[in-house]
Image 1 (cartoon, one colour):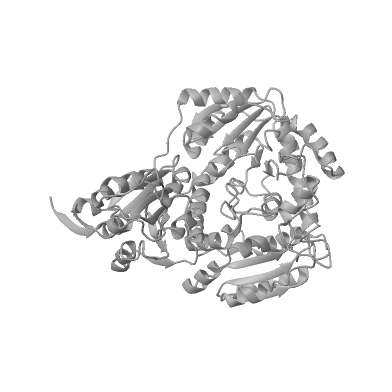
Image 2 (cartoon, rainbow, N blue to C red):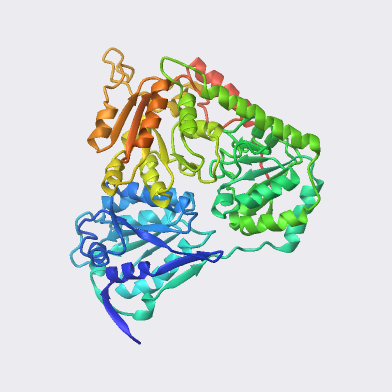
Length: 620
């Protein structure tokens, strides 16, 4: 057998270059390159290997967590058909990636993590940044990745790469089991050489099958649907990952079943498609939540039924409601005590459409959904044009961005009050036009994620919407965007703190405690003084961005037009009225309230909480 003598790190990069993925006859090189920050734990291993393989592009990041977010967003916009590797040194460089790993795994998006690790040969231990424990020498900080990785391994010998990399690719390309894959690489082993078989580095194509459903299960599901009077589809992220939006539209048009969309599933239908009720759940629209409450059959497609989608198990109140769950993942297919229809979303919908040929919901029910669609669009229009002042409302800012963007452009967000408002208000016109990381809702994802989205779809404008709280956590990837010549449109909204949690705190009777960015007040001893004198525009300029400041909604609209003309990353800074909020619509979210308190506002909030909690249901 012909062999090639390489260090383990060189072998890893050479292997990654040769991996391809194929679905529906379309083939892609799986890895787009590697993000990394080098230290003593990877500079002579993976760092040297990347230097030796310039066609496997290396990207320099500013923060290890951020580079994983960038890779995650890239994978999402690529429908999980492409991915990045991310490498770090040992110690804090590695553990900085744990949050990114959790974000990727919870959202089921493929990212390969290659953190440096302590010496496998142990003779020089404890090395710099090594965690020492009195009961084992076989643990390092990289064991922190285990619960947030879909596959985890530590390569203590160079030949272990032969089996570990194959398992890593199996998981990364799996539509059901994908997420973060962590291969912990001891720094001494990275640099050790081994005679690898040359066949290991030949082109390998990982084919992603479209799993067909069991035909008997399809027939049974069709019977349930035909016998229902008030069916409702909940479209989740699996619709988009499976490239099933056209199949969804076909079944909706032929049957008239209305559709509510989860955060990950928003964009499954255009906002103005008559049966589209828009967002459902805690951050849902009035129509989606009313029809969800009354539905006698819920058809979940590619959804995990998180507590925002199910409104903490209060969304579906029909005493006879049943669930059909179309999902490629067996765990999700069995949620809500539902009937599992296991398979690829597009394949299942095609089979189900055929099985339902000739059947349609009652015309009155169909027209009701259509009326809810039209009424909600009028409500969105009202919020878009509040003419609130002098500071604009957040809803007006969202409306201005929506009006300025093209159908194919991407709005991207992750945390704060923006996700809820966007879920309700954004008029989606393209299946990739709405990009919310709401599985983990990770503050700091926004700018790094915008970078990944733009790298995956350079032909689209990306509008990153970020509040001042998230911006202060992780704004430094503006530098990476400037370095790579990648243009982002960053809408930086200043509402002086954590507006989302502030509003939640107020609703729980806690008066927004600790959620505003205010100076320490010597008179009270509390953080209730004046607004902090943070110069956000100056900060963004210092990172290399073009900056436009807008004081009114009119200024903001003009700024959006100017931003379109720019060729480098542009930050539009606008201050909004924190107290002008978008309301809730026929929904609830379970956030426990203090059962005992001396505050009257908390006592009242607890009474309301106890009453609402009684609506929570078990679906068995």
